[in-house]
Picture 1 (cartoon, helix red, strand yellow):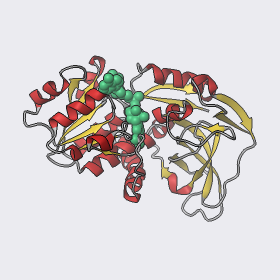
Picture 2 (tube, protein in one colour; picture 1 turned 180 degrees about the vertical axis):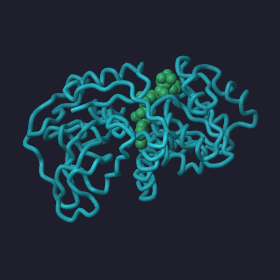
Picture 3 (cartoon, protein in one colour; picture 1 turned 30 degrees about the vertical axis):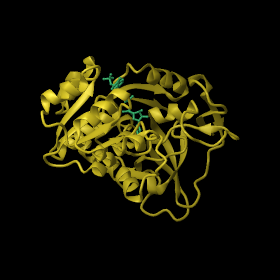
Length: 314
Ligand SMILES: NC(=O)c1ccc[n+]([C@@H]2O[C@H](COP(=O)([O-])OP(=O)(O)OC[C@H]3O[C@@H](n4cnc5c(N)ncnc54)[C@H](OP(=O)(O)O)[C@@H]3O)[C@@H](O)[C@H]2O)c1
C-alpha cells in the first residue's frame, strides 16, 4: 500500500487528507519512486485553494511536485535509471506521498552529499530562479534586483546570479537582511520608499529585475528602476504582466513556458545539486514535518513567518 495526501474540494489546509491507496505501477517512460522527502511550494497551496486555473475536481487530487527518493520500479522504455537509484524528482503529480509515479524525464541523480530534505527542496525554487535569470540574460556585470530575495526562489536566484558574476540587490523583511548578506546580496527592506533605497545603492538604476514578491510596490519600484519594462520579469503577477509590459513565467501567465525555458528548469536541479554538494549553494531547510501533517505544513506556509523550505517526510 501507499500513503498519499489528497483533497476532494478546493479550500483551506483542512481539505488535505492522508489516505492509503494501492501502490501504483509505472507506465511507459515512468518510474515508481519511494519518496524520502517532498518539498512544499506556495503553488501547492494556491492550487489547493483554487487560486490557480485548474480543471474541476472529479477525482481526488494529489498534491506536490517536488520529491527526493529511491527508484523502486522501472516502467517499460526507461533507459538510464535502475531500481535503487537515489534521485531528485521534478514535475511529480502527487509528491506528498510514500510512493509516487514520476516521468523518467523529470529525474536527476541525487548527490550523496546533500540530504533527502535538501534534494526535495530544489526543484521548483531552483528551477524557477535559474530559468528566470537565463531568460532575463543575467550574467557577468549585470546589476540585478530580486524582490523577495529571502524566499526559496529568491535565495536560489541570489546564489545563481552571484555565481554568474552579477551584482545582486535583494529585498527582504528586517529579520532577513543578514541572510541576504551571507548569500552575497546587498540587502534592502521592502516597504514605502523602496525605489529610493535601491537607487541609493544603484544610482543609475538596475539592469534586470526578478520579481518573486508580486506586490504592487515591487512592480512599481521595478518600473521606476529599469530603462525598459522588458528588463523586468515576474513569477507571481503573470496575469497582470502584459498590462505593464513586463515579462512573466507561469505564475498565472497565459503564455506557456517555451521548450527552452522548461529545459532550463530541469537543468537547474542538477546544477544546484552539484553546487550544493560542493558547499557552493546553500539550501535552507526550515522545518521537516511528517507526511500526515501536510495541512499543518500549509498553515505554516500561509503564516509567512518561516524562512527556508518546509518539507514533508513519509
Ligand atoms: N511562476 C512560477 O513558476 C513560480 C515558481 C515558484 C514560485 N512562484 C511564486 O513565487 C513566490 C515566491 O515563492 P517562494 O517559494 O520563494 O516563497 P517563500 O519561500 O514562501 O518566500 C516568500 C517571500 O516573500 C517575501 N515577502 C513577504 N511579504 C513581502 C512584501 N510585502 N514585499 C516583498 N517581499 C515579501 C518574504 O520575505 P521576508 O520573509 O523576508 O519578509 C519571502 O522572501 C510565490 O508567490 C510563489 O507562488 C512562482
